[in-house]
Length: 402
Ligand SMILES: Cc1ncc(COP(=O)(O)O)c(C=O)c1O
Image 1: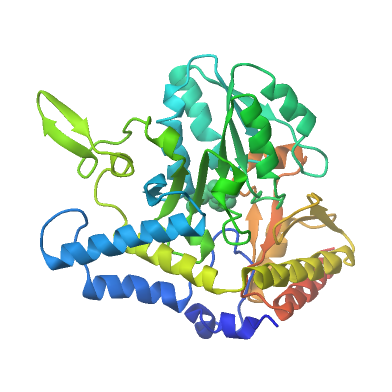
Image 2: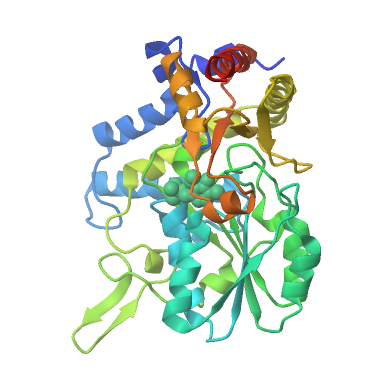
């Protein structure tokens, strides 16, 4: 039996807002006490800069920071902690890869980007195209919101296809991709794969070696960790060849005006003082997630998701977007007779937090032929009562607005 009350009690925010129904988890999750404690403990007992100085606090801080890197590596089953680069989040991780691996591509090389992507996995590739002449190829989706595999095959058949940029799970409509299959397919064509795991990491068990991806990126704050920290996993054979992208302290070997040499990865790709406390907090979040029965947690979220979609189908005037076979636990909605913004406002008045808008996925929203959706997204601490309250409030709101 999955004890959701015991889980929820570990999140201090809910003690301050006992009536809150928080269904905006795809935007950011709440943080368990162990994450807050880990950051506080670092500042209280080990605060110093890392990789510098010979005093004991500097050693403690460095050990904690490098320990966090090892925790991340274990959590996604990277073959070495050196394959983990700390970034500010998913967005910076993708920009890092665009400005290193991407910059090494040639004019005319093709980057396949799916229509499902968040702007963070579109715009850096477009900016790269302006810099070095790579070509961004849009990968179509089906009416269900799944990747059009025939189109993917067609795009991969081009000898210039060098990178597939694909989300593990869509933030806007929830579709989960068969990443292993897409990596196998892409590699047959000598095309690398970057996976945006921002919406997957908190829900699915991620094993980068089993998936076979070349790059996997995610943000701490969507996985019960702090803001300001994220991860770029880069497979060792690729990482070794990547140039530095930002210059500064920590990333060098020797600096002189005659010329500078750079450190090995991961330090080569982490210029300046990193987000030490946040990395430690992220490790605490991943340890917290790993301490759950992940299978039971996923079953709990899946059951809530089923309850949510079943209830939504019974409310007149609700349109559910995205009907992929596999979805993370979110529902993206529009309404026959009401605007999502108005509905969200009414829900907020009743203490129900949802997200409304284009969810930084304008190409997808445009393809769906709408201007935005209301998104209710679930996390492991949500309860059947949260879903029931949302459904009742939504039905009453639509009655009122129709
Ligand atoms: C699928 C996806 N990719 C990328 C991002 C960007 O994440 P961040 O803003 O934490 O860098 C998000 C955030 O909503 C997302 O959902």
